[in-house]
Length: 287
Image (cartoon, rainbow, N blue to C red; front, side, top):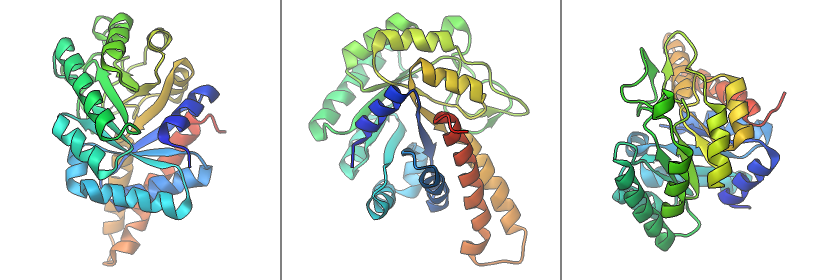
């Protein structure tokens, strides 16, 4: 089977993107995987530090690998939003396919320094593992929001500057870059998230020449997401919409006399699968 880097390169070449969906449990993974398999597209599973702690680092690897091996299917695992080199090391040693070092709360100079140290370490541990980094704070919680997260980069002067992105990539050697282009983690209650700066995506990609990653795409319009993909985004992250669908379906399943988990969880799995399929069709320009 081809590695994740090859699938990302192929996605860029075809003008599509790979979907990245976070999980906290087997039901999330099952729903996401079934949707990807139905559409026959590669998929990336993510676990941020809290999700990784709950599910287990080695356990997440075992679950994803079991699906990859049983079905000979391109399903990959990413350590999403990792804030320390120790956590990056843990994920790489356990067998993750990619890691994200999140230094967005650091100064720009310190973010460069720590991201470079992360890249150097990962290259020594396993050169096949991809390293992503971020510049520009877009919030840190995948939840339904009453307002834009404090400090998130949504105004033009706060967005990622193309020249800074170029310097960051050159000095760190990261494989993937997640810029702030008007996106936010989580999704706003009762409405769509702010429009994304497509022109900025194109300007950054034209300079850095590495695949870009769109974080916090829950709540963004299909039109904005597809425009970002055409401009240079190769991976799109969805988490909040998965969480909301799962919770709503789980509540409905629990509001019965049924006590067998595999029965009342079926609706939650189906809800996750439905959202994932809808998003994957957008990312792959299907239908």
